[in-house]
Length: 197
Image (cartoon, rainbow, N blue to C red):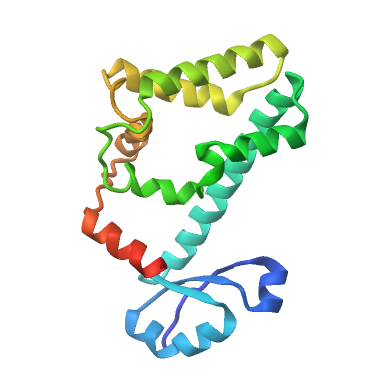
């Protein structure tokens, strides 16, 4: 008997319209043999790795989404309490780099290849911005728990002499704490991007 784990993402509407992502874990040959069935369930079945890997991918997906959601609630309450209309703020933020690109698309620039030099935006400048935002939060009485944690991470990275590197270099601190090194070869990233095209 063969088993695959295949959690889905897309909600009830995705289930009705067959617009579901499926993250599949298990034996690759079993996945290939049952791919037509998986294709009937959703439009995006994706083989992740051995059994359990599909569930891990789903947990990473959901947890990252909720972390982003929590961060957005924090910074939007700051903006609104500072006097900016919420809809105007949303439209304004969408005009910046963060609003114009999907969050995960940007991971291929520095994080996945593990290259943080030739910065798109230096850690020193990012630290200044987050420091100003947390100061505004204190001034207005807006709790900034996540932003304060971000500032602590950036400060630790600055203290290591990384201020001239890309702002994402602070992500190395978590890799270090977890005992993980992430460095995907550029050709593998290009290949993965080609699969999505």
